[in-house]
Image (cartoon, rainbow, N blue to C red; front, side, top):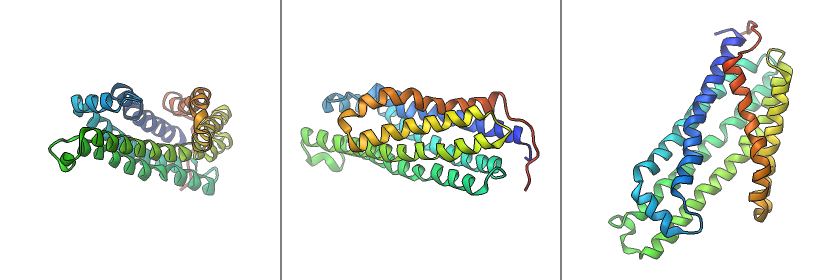
Length: 229
C-alpha cells in the first residue's frame, strides 16, 4: 500500500475502531460499577456484574493491541516526512501499552480478592474490601502513568502532520493542543492531586481534540501521494 490516501484512511479506521472498546473499558464500565468512596457498593456491583467487569478487561486489551497496528501504519505513512520523528512517535505510542496490560492484571486480582471461596477466603469482608481498593488504586496508577505517554506521543505526531503536506496543518496543531491537555492533567494528578479533578474538567475537552485527526483521515483521507519505500 503506497498511497498516502489509503494509508491515512486505514490509520483512521484502526484508530476509530480501537476507540470503541477503549471508551467502553475506560469510561462505561467504571461509571457503571465503581461507587467512589464506597468499597462495599463497588464490591457488590462487581460481583453482581462480573461478566461486565471481565468484558471491560478484555475490551481494554483489544484496544491496546489495535494501538500497535495504528503505530505501524502511522510510521509507514509519516516516515517520509521525518523518519526520526516518526520512529519517536511510534516509540512513545508503544510504551504505555504494556503499562496498561499490567494495569489489567490488577483488575484480575480484584476478582481473586472478592472470591469468598478462593485464596482470600481467610480474610474478613472488611479486609477483602481493603485489598480490592488497593488493587483498583494500583490500576488507576497504571493508567495515570500511561496517560503521560498518551500525551507525549501527540507532540511528534502533531508536528509530523503539520509538516506532512498531505494532511491539513490545523490537525497537527490540534494534536499538539490535545497533548498539552494530557500533559496538564498528568502533571496535576502527579504533583497536585487535590487539583486533579479541577484540571481534568479543563483538560478533558482539549484531549478530545485528538479524535478529530483519525476521523478526518477515515472520512476525508489525505492528498494522494506515492510513498517512497
